[in-house]
Image (cartoon, rainbow, N blue to C red; front, top):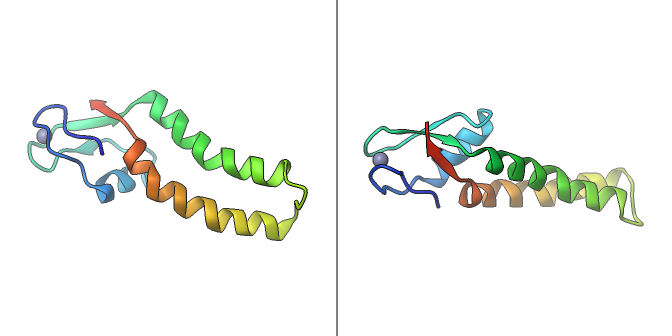
Length: 93
Ligand SMILES: [Zn+2]
């Protein structure tokens, strides 16, 4: 998990997840209040992790169809949402 660049306090999963849902809103450290912005590469990685598996499952799968899409969304999205806060990297705003 990302830590505050200033005071080394660890960000919480909830903080980062909220930032992701608010279009990569900067995260303020709970201890010292320093604002952190999402790194550009992390944004690209986040988009790829959301779209990539869906694309692979639905366009390269021999079982393509509406159900396949729905099931893959139900499996992939929660996994990505759960993992992303651990992967995202921030820098000082
Ligand atoms: Zn801090």
